[in-house]
Amino acid sequence: MSSKEYKIDEAIDLGYQASGHVSGLSIIAEIYDETGVKDTSNFPDVTLVEVGSSGTYRGSFIPDAEGTWQVITYVTPSGDGQVVKNYSVGFHNVHSVGDAIVAMNVKIDDLDTKVDSLDTPPMAF
Image 1: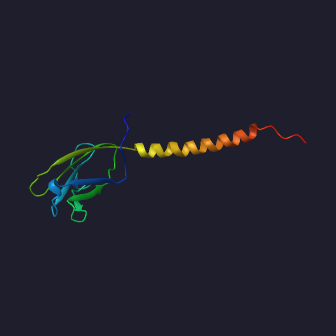
Image 2: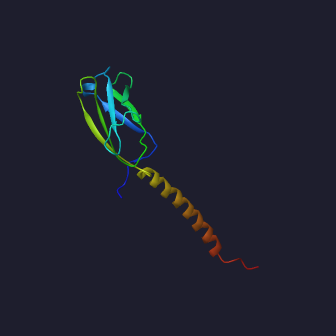
Image 3: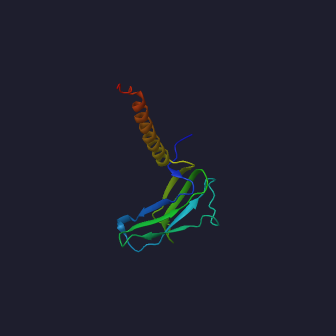
């Protein structure tokens, strides 16, 4: 199984940078679920919100199933500036696996320390 970048039931942040940093646009992100369907009853279009007047727009959505999700982002109503991005979603993402390994290594180090203390011969009196 390939590694997943994003995790089920956790928000995926969306971003859009307008060409020329144009401010005041209306930016929409259409969400297509893991089956390739645009299910607006469960995943309505996301209206991205501009950060200040920078021409940078942000939004998010929360996937509820494993698979490849697709987001098409564009300026509305013209449809200009269309960007398509796929998001690989799974039960565990690469970050959560990495965090689990770090936690496990801490426990192994603690166990090694305890074993080392048992290996030390008792002091003679």
